[in-house]
Length: 362
Image 1 (cartoon, rainbow, N blue to C red):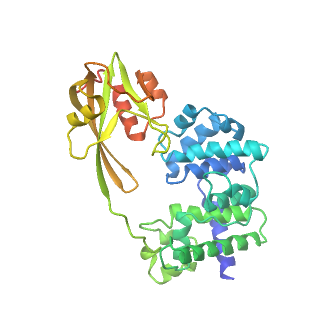
Image 2: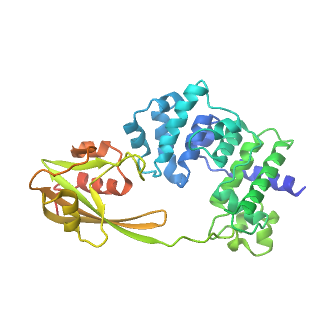
Image 3: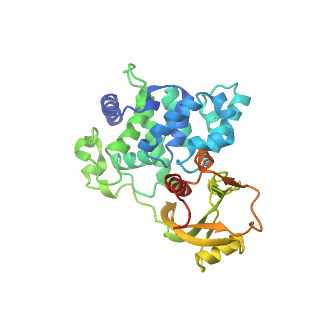
């Protein structure tokens, strides 16, 4: 009975209060799939313009399967975790070849596609097809752990299994509901996601505005802030890189990152990690004795997982050809720099170059 009352409250709240997001206006599994992949590790406000541009440029699975790599990466530029977009295209090719171009409906077939795990397959099945399949992401972990006062590290199998079982019970309760005016399974999973995104947040949850606070065991036990049990944090590591903006004839040297690395296939300015050396020594490692007029342009700080990265950017000119240049290097003018997909930190360098009237060393 408690599950039924909880599900009814969630469905009522979601029907009234759900944010108007563009992928919620469709039941097309392709659009829902793209949104779910984009939303991994990325905020909704960031994803909206990317998703809208994507479905305009690549409206079908067929168009995705045949998209040139340069355009694919440019459409994804700035979202990060670029293996996601390459898996999207790999999956689109498989759908074209093995499923007649139609997105599969069976959970097991969806799970078999590159880049799709248990959560994403469950989200697509429930949202697009209204199937009673759970979809437990970070938001649901938090919401379920609090509503049912589930202790323990959610990454541990016993705790994780408990949360998935609870999600399964709730979506099956929604499927058995007599209210058929809405897609209950779809709305149930989305309501839990929405609750975690806007009400039951990691910090400062809005319990007074929660539509299911009367069902929340953690609230009754005054344990909301301590659940879910936090995982042990990895130590933060500091890394320093030097990047070099090499100008020659109003063109700039850039190279493409190789396969099998972070940000594979994206473009960047020549760079190297500085450990026990300075910028001039680093430049000599990359270019031999070819650089001159070395001067700092800017400093960019950013994070990748547990790494805190400082990117020191220097401008320089060449006094002679570079002894060894990677085969993927190119000399690019400002327009070409803007057209290619660059690593996010290096995109900031381009913005400085495009806006600057004289982008040489300063």
